[in-house]
Amino acid sequence: MSAIGVVSSCSCLRPGVWLLKPGMQKMSSFGLHTAARCAAKDYYEVLVLGGGTGGITMSARMKRKVGAGNVAVVEPSETHYYQPLWTLVGGGAKQLATSARPTGSVMPKGVEWIKSRVTALDPDKNCVWLENDIKISYKYLIISLGISLHYEKIKGLPEGFEHPKIGSNYSVHTVEKTWKALQDFKEGNAIFTFPNTPVKCAGAPQKIMYLSEAYWRKTGKRSRANIMFNTSLGVIFGVKKYADALVEIIKERNIAVNYKRNLVEVRADKQEAVFENLEKPGVTEVHQYEMLHVTPPMGPPDVLINSPVSDEIGWVDVDKETLQHKKYPNVFGIGDCTNLPTSKTAAAVAAQSGVLDQTISLVMKNQLPTKKYDGYTSCPLVTGYNKVILAEFDYNAQPLETFPIDQSKERVTMYHMKADMMPLLYWNALLKGYWGGPAPVRKLMHLGLK
Image (cartoon, rainbow, N blue to C red; front, side, top):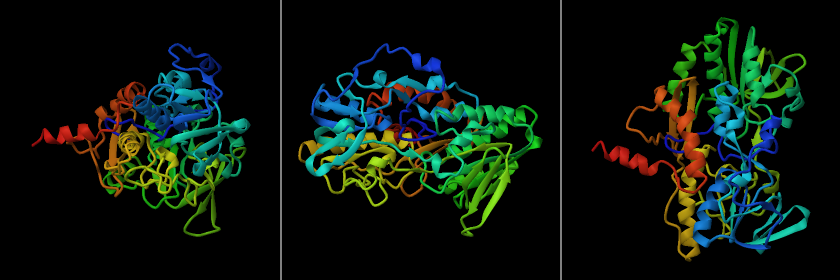
């Protein structure tokens, strides 16, 4: 996630379906700009699929271009979440309620909210189908449907979350279970996993590990904890500069890393986790755990699989520089649901939104897009309750840092940026379409040194 962009433990942030705490369901609807409804019209100049970070951001930008009443967002969920905060919720540093707001309160004024679910896309006819066989046509389509979590692809889940000592920061239903498991830890293996699929914010699975280690040191339990990071990857992080720094932290804190290990089963009643060895097909290992943090397999939303707008896997097939669809010139994609070859984070969405805004503006004028997205993405690697390594990089996995300092070092300032400043920037700038990533700040920072 970005230094000045939105930081994330997850990227294109998808709203949840319901909340864990009943009290949170009674959040005030003060400030709602538009009521949810069945489609008020059957045609919109700009139709946005998805009311997560990318969808809300682009709808705000598009409303300023084409006017009120001409933009609609299709989103079934009543609650919008700032998911980057969930790393800190799982570590006990923030409350879950502070990450949630009613979807209506973040919907831009003048943008129609269609509270429904997309069931099919027909780009050849410039229309989509919603639940109850409702057809909506469009002139321009922006797809921002996020990424789907697949706990069910791990045998024993999600029903295993009914047992204690297991949690996951990736779901509103399980993030508080992480904090409970962390507090209840007594002695034994604490296992943190990374799946054999694309994920949103690839740093998040290890952030909670560092927070857990710090918590157990603080509470005098560290000597009784055998901390293990079982990752399907072959490296700790995809960018060497930050990977080198993380490896040193792992050594200093006596954390065991097992590469090429993929979680395939959880036997929650026995507190056992089963991993396949990706280097030895068919070979599995069983580990007893006292605490287990699960990062689920992820993939494209079902509606995009085998869709005309998607590639062979199911990701929206867009040009990596302009975010315009490769086949349909009036279709665009942003965020986690696309096949952009960069890390799926909310910081990436921020940078993409600025580029996509200009792309669509030129397409509306029958001109060719000129602004190019460089793959900018970011992840604030939380390494303690007051420490963050701010990783920022591009398509080529090369550092693309905002500040003229060594961002591979743990810094208190970057922690407060993530924990305190970024939520304000998210709610008040990014979702309102006024923040397009840190590129202008980066330029000013580095010009100031010349």
